Length: 636
Image (tube, rainbow, N blue to C red; front, side, top):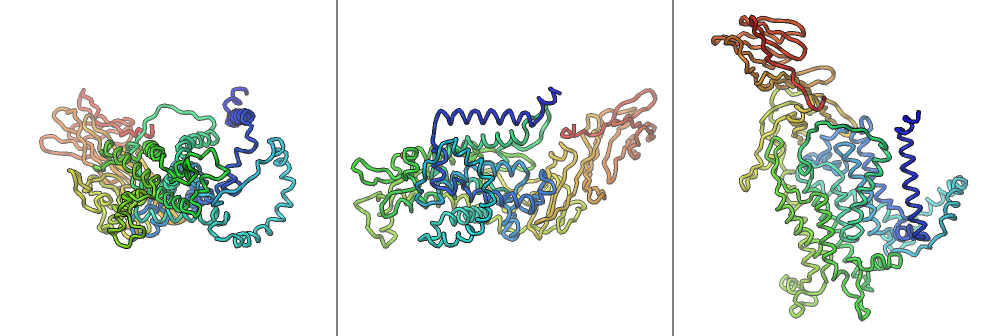
């Protein structure tokens, strides 16, 4: 009984929770912050909570559960129709930035969004200039107040309708609706995230899926507006992930097992991530420059009393010169912004520039990727930090009216901003042309299964129409590559993809292919069944199963066993619906079906004996193994 208790999830969760509470209490008592821990977020956010980020996260979860049918199977949502396939398939463009490929993909993005989005929303602020908040009562008083709140719940619920009715009047009382904390928290912040996701989908290179483009937008905004905090927050995402896993699975058991997958860096949607990062940084630069140009020339956001001291040397804080005048904001902090971008990009694999060679082969250009990352970090630093003083003061024109005058009056800040816009265009531009090309509506190989416009089949070494949608050749590489595996196509939805690669199917033996649309799904199971000839390689067939109906999609070439028996060659061949044994002697071939379990068949004077997962050939006193059933590592 004691042993069972020690392995109980509840016991481990309680023990871990007690440890965390004791640790926080000890730090609190030593620090004696007198409510300072919550004062900074409450000075900029409603109740100190990033409501806009939480609203967006709730919406993304809703998309996963109800649009992708994740509520039916949380580990296997419908993915194929919710990628950004083409401008001619709006449904994919609308959902691609908010849909996900699986539960791990979803939780990873959302946990990062909690940290990055919360920090970005804090930098933006529900209160444009911050606000004064009281230092609050002591810990004991607040705990007593917290315990008394359940008794106050009925009266609070009775007052709720009146408070809701007062919201419009509170918004109207503000000079500009955009300065209302309610508008900023519940409209501007979530609206900006949704708009950013929709806009970025228009420039996605390839069938991208996932909220990560918005998450990287959050990070871009945070790295420019709060670089030190953003670097710390990068470690915070790891902590949040660990806490989530600890609560979900307090005790985990594991053992050594084989796995299958492409290189980790090949799973990085680097173009989409770079697009989000640059876009978020650009928004932050424009916003902070506008704040710096307020009548008093001071960025009150960064220099307000609520954050004095902590962000005094923040790279976007307005500096004060020795003479008391307002100096430009970030003249001494370019290195800080540059370093923060480099650290973030390196940790998020933004250096992973690669070329797809076809059939799950990739070529990584790591050195070039690091150089491009450094250039991007420098461009962001220049745009965020440079001064608004002309590069050539003696040639500057106060109010330039011509292009020549504008060039002569250019400032480092303007040059940096133009470079940042250029970087955004360079990253976004390559995604336009592929999205304008329609998928070829030609017939797929084999005998495809059709499901509401989708076609599912299996083929090997056929041209990859997804990668080769635009024919590009450069530096000895081409987009004309081949692919092998389960192919899903739907010309009406502009879909053509290798849903399951040949290697993946060979590793697992069977895979589920989910097709569908908003709120519906159909599943086609694809199974590989094969026999391996002795020292001769495998022969296999690939079947599709739907509604308990099996259809053979593909059969491979026969495999000849290496051993000969009295001059006779024996081969195993996959055929539609089964397997055959072929015995060749003196240019004559006799074909028989693969014997059933425990039976024997004759061909060319050779007895073919089936024993379990092995097949033997016997003639006289000679007996050799000619084949055994194919095994799949993922199922062992």
